[in-house]
Length: 348
Image 1 (cartoon, rainbow, N blue to C red):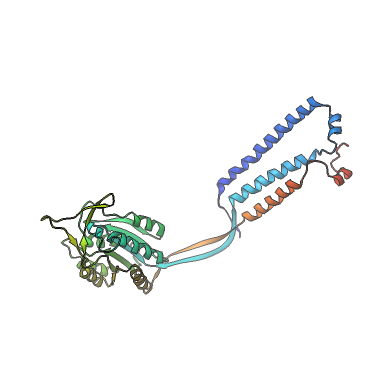
Image 2 (tube, helix red, strand yellow):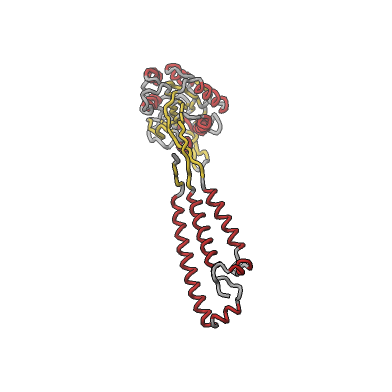
């Protein structure tokens, strides 16, 4: 059985143009007849325009109305189909925990740590097919940024909006980010739960993030940590209007040097049955992570029955173009061979 679907129903309003055209036509016809009566008698008008047809103007009006009607229906774009397909989606639930603490402003890795993190995750999202993603931002505390979704465009939009002023409480609470990520995995049967921790590895909380990661593993969560920064480290610039005014200092007035804590990130990944990735080289890091994801046994978590519809607008548009050509060729004067037949009993 054929199914029908109208894509743009709003264009049905264009059909109101037809009665407007008819109204203008008949108003103009009445005005012309009155003007002709004032100008001359009907016999004289017949002599002045002997080949004028009474029927063809009405025919042209009908053709014009049909053109408008068919064009409106073409804009509505009726679709027809009866084919049903089952769409399967396989993948993992992939949550990105993004470090937005002030230490991520360090420029020991170009352009700085937080922008490097955004570039990494954005390119990882470009490589995904069928996986669901979520985003968490954390500094002194963690908060949800994007719930689990397959909308990659929204993911990139929220990712781009991340900055170090998002969290008022400063510090780096990696453990809070891991605990918050647990709430993202809402599918009990989902076995492939992956948390990608993007950070410089500094942890200012008293809780042991490595121990929290081990508990996360018990819930089926694999943590892949990506280190952003260098072990040599660098100062944290304080800018105004993009210009460095000074560098962050500690209580004794010494410039703070923030360094990549690779050991902490490796411990977190190891305890959660994951891997550590060096984020210095963007392409290499992206390729390494996508390879790890491909090696996982992906589970089907979404299946839909959908009908495939085919556009039908071309038939209506084609008919409208044929009638338009006919309207151009159709003159308002009598056709000679039709005039001889006098099919419409027109007076000679």
